Image (tube, rainbow, N blue to C red; front, side, top):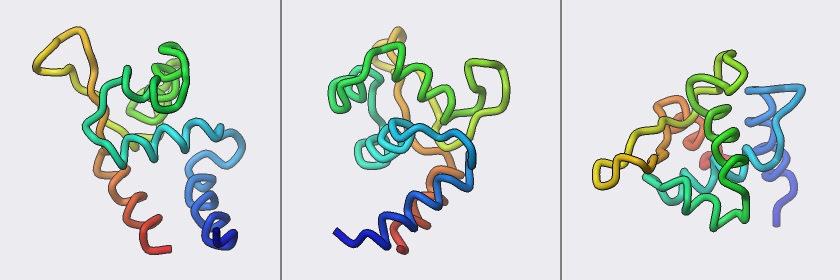
Length: 105
């Protein structure tokens, strides 16, 4: 693995939240980027996270953080049209821009 590229990729995320961006936020973003649209349940299964953790993380990466402050706006969340009690995650336009930046490294 090229550690310089890994460092550059992590730096792209740290610009978004310089003082406190947990690693699992990056992991959730990358899983969504690879498998979008993806259900919360699938993120939980893939990363071994609880429903509460996935919910908090997705909220932080979408429009509104659970604390009410602005989220990072990297993801968008929509109800699953096939089952209205489930939610699908996909990249927002800002998330797609970050993904392009990561792919160019």
